[in-house]
Length: 229
Image (cartoon, rainbow, N blue to C red; front, side, top):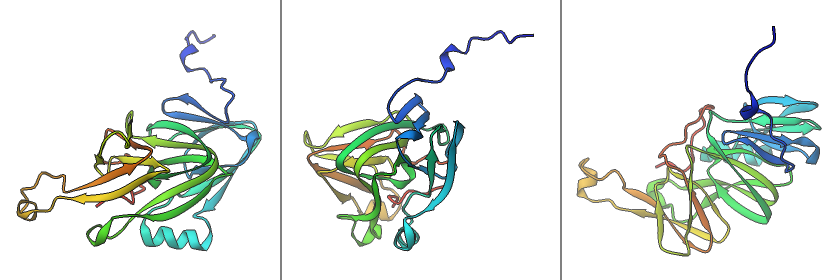
């Protein structure tokens, strides 16, 4: 007996970009455009010829940085000529294209990026001794990036006004943005009667900051943000 159901809403998308959203929570990647770095465990399906190999953390240097900072992206190399579908704990996915550009992104939010992009773990300014240093993943060059957010994000233009955000809500910012840490430590904070907003990340310069509507990344893989205090 045939199945009587209307699957029209869920049919595979036919976008032509190498990184195409299948839905808000699933990414479709065409591998014929070149190798892709994807978060380990993020593959939910594929069609055609696709191969998956552990990519590590960028050699010995990347491994040491990840161990010392707690930041980084555990990735696998995805190659072939098929189509791969990626997702992470049903988080929403945002896709962007870098053209000889650079972004700073919370490693826990990175889903996938073009193999043509360079990745690194870098210290970000103004953290101070209280925070023990802040570290983020940087992606630079030309290619696609897919990041996840816990709900639909807001993107703020830091050039319009002084901009501050909770460290656990910040997902990424673009080249040209300067970050510093603002602290509000008082006697009330020390005796447990503070507002709970002791530290904020401050942004200035020219560019954009993406903030998610959550103060903690929902991780299926158990990854921890390097931006926590």
